[in-house]
Image (cartoon, rainbow, N blue to C red; front, side, top):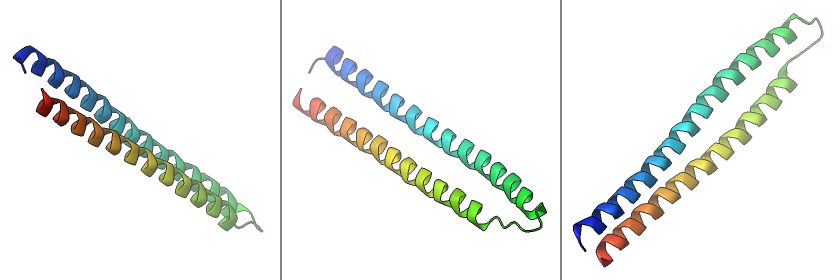
Length: 100
């Protein structure tokens, strides 16, 4: 393989890996925002229910917890997809470098 072809393959690989790293970073940012905003909301709703003479917030808290669990499942799924794409990219890159 000539140097130009090698350089081109390396640049394409680096670009793809950077894209996947940015996707992973965005996912982590979304997760942090979600937890921060959800915790703030749970605090406000819990405070509201504590002030009611008859109200309990356990039902509301359980709904929040269910939503958090569903969100965590979706996040883990997206993380797995990114990691799988990264593994595929590395495998394809190594195959191309070995075959040329």
